[in-house]
Image (cartoon, rainbow, N blue to C red):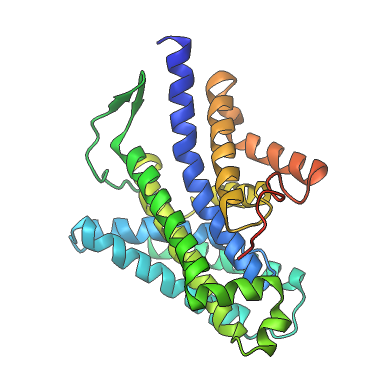
Length: 294
């Protein structure tokens, strides 16, 4: 394979992985802007999406077209319960306390998943088969195209929701000033619940579409959640294109680093980028370009 073909391969693979990071990062950003906290249980929603889908297909024999929406619904129910039982009762908690609660929730969900399923890695069949597709000298799995398509659709739908619906505009108002939003009659608690519903659904969808490529297990959400958080930090914790660009940038750099340097440094790249951003530009690389927060 020529060098140009290798670079194209790394680029496409990195963009596909970065699209997943973008979806997870959007979940982080939506909850952060609605509540002011960082939900470190977001990665567990990713894990639950993949594990629920595997269980519904392999155990109950459901068609993937039915199993995927059911898995998203089940994961969303977990997100609702998490908000109701862990976040809502804490009326005067500090942001640090809420962050610790989300970390505890992440550990609890992961432990329950280990008991309910097992410690093994589970595979999910590709949505459109496993025959590689050659594009500009690079070989892509059909699942990569699903990742690109789903990410574009989700980003477009979220843009429409936050810009043109009453609930979306109310969530944007809460992101700017929660006190002012409550004074004009917006139910802030309901907006927080909506934020958890949207973020858990996004996380589960990300876990489902990436499972055929990476497989899934009870602890898969730890690392992928951190990388989604890194994407959100790069984008300035915005729920718009800043986080999307952050996820794509992280995915491409990770792919290039693993291909050109060593695959052993693949996970370390995300931590290095995160530290550099926090030290050099803590507001995020794309904060100026992204003026809206939701």
